[in-house]
Length: 294
Ligand code: C2E
Ligand code: MG
Ligand code: MG
Ligand code: MG
Image (cartoon, rainbow, N blue to C red; front, side, top):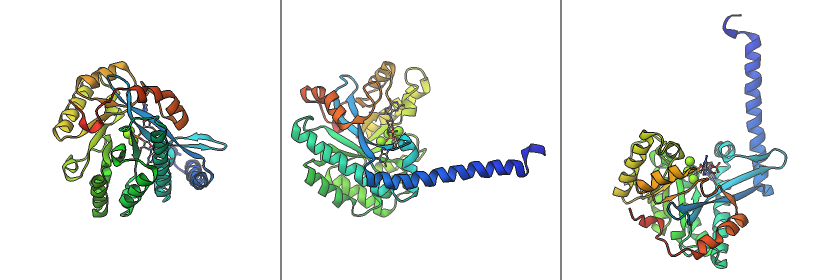
């Protein structure tokens, strides 16, 4: 048959669709189990000063090691968790675990007093009117001041969010928690939300960082983003910094903080503490991220 239509082709199509659907359902079931069985853990990636490489904080990133399939990337299971209504449970677990860990690091003296953790929150979590109260309770319980907590959300939260979400953001900000726009620049949205919501900083998406120093357009986009952010009093963090060239290009346009494989990928808590303890504790006092000098 012409153009590969007909029963043969549609069978193949059905089969591969079927396989995809089955894979999804299997992962969803496995993910529920993972939550119950403690197959999840939190990995920490340093957020550093671009000039010194000294960590000022860390991003908490969830990890899942499936008992037979091995590590499953968040890009695979977070969307499933969102569709399956599991994101609240996962997000709550990650946040509590990260705040508990920061409390331990603080009491051990593994981190300085202004070291902060940046935690990803999904739109669903931010539509829970109880969230600010819950977060404030957790900070109290684990002895973590609000200035040592940042929550990362995508721009869609503010563009599509309800009035409940808006109230939640203002209440969180009221507590003193930092609010960062993750993957900044990928949402193609009007920037008005930066004025309407109590955002404290942006994280420039890796897709703009990759071409720095090589692709003139990326240099100009980042330059413009930094100028605008600073004019609005927002902090700037660059994501996915992998090369010295990118680091220098960022520094030269006034970006002070970043994260990326140039300094290290996310690692489990014990490794993080072991690897970075000396750098964090012996560092001279560095300005907190909100007081980005440039
Ligand atoms: P994200 O929040 O933008 O996190 C940054 C991602 O970039 C992480 O991928 C990190 O491992 C990766 N990365 C860091 N440095 C480099 C680098 O130099 N080069 C490259 N190529 N990649 C780098 P990861 O851990 O796979 O997470 C992917 C996404 O999954 C995150 O993107 C975030 O949107 C989501 N995610 C992770 N943990 C959580 C969580 O606890 N809750 C929610 N809601 N989402 C999460
Ligand atoms: Mg993030
Ligand atoms: Mg990010
Ligand atoms: Mg990203």
